[in-house]
Image (cartoon, rainbow, N blue to C red; front, side):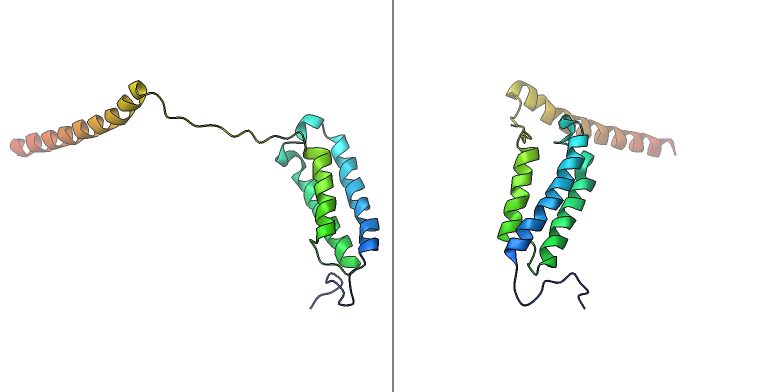
Length: 132
């Protein structure tokens, strides 16, 4: 059922795992260094490399009989995140309602326009009935 990728039952060799994970981090760091630093916060610029990095950490973790993710692997991935993505801020837009002078016409104009169009349709349909 699991061919080579399932963790061993006899235990996790955390020491070997922590020796192997830096290879994944170095490969990811090398690729990220080739990207312009201003692209580091644009996920579409590095998602392929990040997926390779994640797959590498999973394979290396499973190779030594550990489950992935585990607390040590997550700590390693978090350190990589801090190294490359600590300057990426999430700017949250603070939405506010416009002032009442603007909000009231924005609400009433579509309502009045809908009523006017319905009246026009009714008037046109009645006048076409009179012509028949």
